[in-house]
Length: 165
Image (cartoon, rainbow, N blue to C red):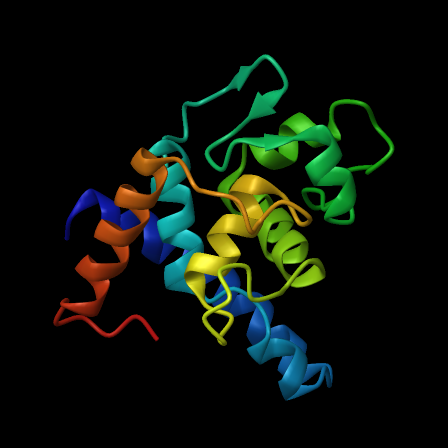
């Protein structure tokens, strides 16, 4: 299995668990279907940092999804198990860990969910724009390198023999 697929599958597992828990405890199917899907989440990670787990913080941007503290706060301050969202270092610990970071992206994109490119459907390109450009700036232009990596990753899974759904 290619490194890209392994990274996406790891993040996908976290999302799958979250969706299963949501269904088990009675969240509505409508809410579950309106969140970024696992393959999209993995491809956003690939476009942001090649899903490099060793990425630390560069200035105010941290982790494999390149998340800022205001983004993390806006996503509801997800934390690792038994961590305190009010602890100053909780942000860094969360965005440095793939599952917690993925939860932040899932929360943020769900919060700002909209059709950013005006094509009449909310899909991975919209979620990627929300993540990369912000909830209120997603109608702007994605950087070409981000867009190319995202598209390449999505195409790789579309053409894959493996079933990741």
